Image (cartoon, rainbow, N blue to C red; front, side, top):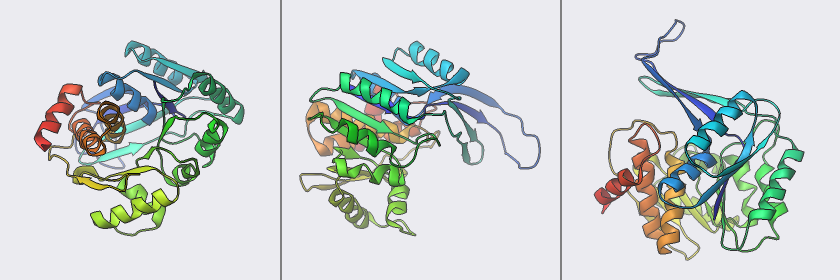
Length: 303
């Protein structure tokens, strides 16, 4: 089973504004609502690829109820913990550029995290995948993921995947996650780099993350593709297919889902990286998470 954990799920409000101008009233030309949060996106993408997945996380308030209702409608298996406050609303403004305004999230406490730990201890078995992604609410600190893994460390043989920023990510590396997937900007922030390095420089940074504990590292590079270093001492780069950017939200999550799906199927790192890159690109070229057919079409262009 592939379990995903979303500490900070959201209700995403997408608005299209033609020629957005500051300081005046702007009118939308279109708008839509969708559930969001990186772990939820990974589960939805995995379900589309035919994988069995189960989503966990925290929800609150009327926005949390909408998230539950929508996830039920989408047919996703889930078990959310109800907490205080409100699940966040993220505003995604599409105009001449993309502008995101993300909320802070619900009031998740240490006691709530304890409930999550108990659920995971009852669920996780050897060979399962545990995918922990995204930000955490402001009531928790940068040790939130590391503390979670510390409490689960006696469960052996679980493939841990982490997609997060800064210390939220680096503090988990001591627990030897199977895979981490920072994007190139997050990688630069971790190492204090003022400019994006070339591919060899990205490999070097990824190896440093391995030295810190990560077993495999993918660095997503947007339209430039993705680089990976593996625990089998391989370094590989995949160039992305060119296309029209429609929506970047969920592209990184689709990469994570695509990699897991293909790696489970083939056990081959390069094949998994190639499919992951296709999945990320396909998502970026559509308004929502891509279908399996769209991903396979993009992958066919990369061969």
